Amino acid sequence: MKLLNYVSGLWKEGSGLGEPLVDPVTGEELARASSHGIDLGGALSFARSQGGVALRTLSYQERAGALAKIADVLAANRDEYFRISLLNSGATQADASFDVDGGIYTAKFYAKAGLALADGKMLKEGSQASLSKTGVFAAQHFLAPTQGAAVFINAFNFPAWGFCEKAAPALLSGVPIVIKPATPTAWLTHKMVEDIVKAGVLPPGALSIVCGSARDLLDHVREEDVISFTGSADTAARVRSHANVLRRSVRVNIEADSINSAVLGPDASPRSDVFNLFVKEVVREMTLKAGQKCTAIRRVFVPRAHLRALGDAVSEKLVQIKVGNPRNLEVRMGPVVNKAQQSSCFEGLASLKNECSVVFGNDRQFQPLDADPEKAAFVQPTLLSCDNGLAAHAVHDVEVFGPAATLIAYDTPNDLIVLLRRGLGSLVASIFSSDAPFTQQLVVAVA
Image 1 (cartoon, rainbow, N blue to C red):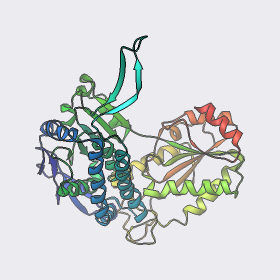
Image 2: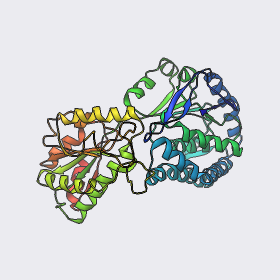
Image 3: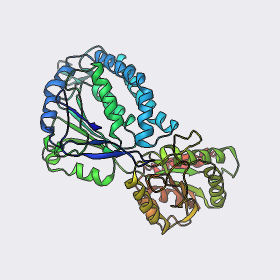
Image 4: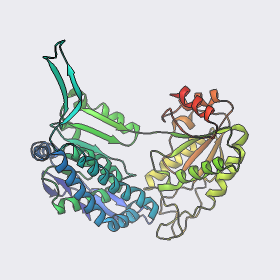
């Protein structure tokens, strides 16, 4: 199977062999994707001149109605999306639901929000402002759709939700979209776009998809366009610094690497309700979607006195997680997306081991259930421990995009604040504590 590109209102096959999409459990090739030979400049031009114009003739409520129909189309094909998620992403039922159901819910949410907007083609922003003492001159801000197209370059981990969370607000706003899904899991996004196109919900040019390489797509963006990228910081830097993007001052929105944190407050003693909730959350974040979430907990800050107890408690839970082929209903965690991502995880873990000790996992030879480890892309859930986070570097700078987390000991709230300021993550972390003064002190200081 070769994934076709939907551009300029037509399905078109890219030239050449294309890039393979594989089953991360069996290693079997599922499909190929190629954008070579596709006129990407023409696709953007068609999106602006046809799709954008047609969308802007509709009111916000009419576009919300179209979104509601899209949500219905996606919901009707949910079982097929789950099947593709299993094959192409190695997703368990929980993983597939997180992605697919999250996408459908997002489309429904924006449809509902749009129906509550004024039935017009522009939106008032704020109240009228007087520009003179007598009130003879006044100003009113209005919001109107951009005249360009939205280019969405998406990550491999959420082919359904990532598509919907960007497409829904853009379409509601009257902006045509060009989706470039990450090639390793492009099949699911492609199938969703195919179903929407077949349903005839949107005007031609309102929705396009490019499968395979982005090639020269960014050479053709213009001032009125907007780019949204989700993925690695290295690729994000290339998008930001692209010559045409800079020359034309194209708006760019980036969601790149992040090392998110969770904090166990000093009052949360071992086996307390807060402590047990914390353990449950760390394990869930490590194993859901095999840790392939930008919001997953990577750094776990723990009072030094509780470091050993927390490591033991998390390990007790991890040993019960069955890892293997998601076709086995006992399995609770599947593989990472492919062999390349598996190698990236192993490389990142090797960097972390220079500063940390291994509490659980990191066995490359572990045997997943009902799968050949030589063909599959499994990474064993791995918990590490860092005794001196203030002197460490990798635990704050290296994101293992897989089932891994690092416990980091802290002694005082001030030490914790310094640690939180390190790394690629946000400054505000999830805090598990029943001590309100401590929580307030920490949040205020960090913010």
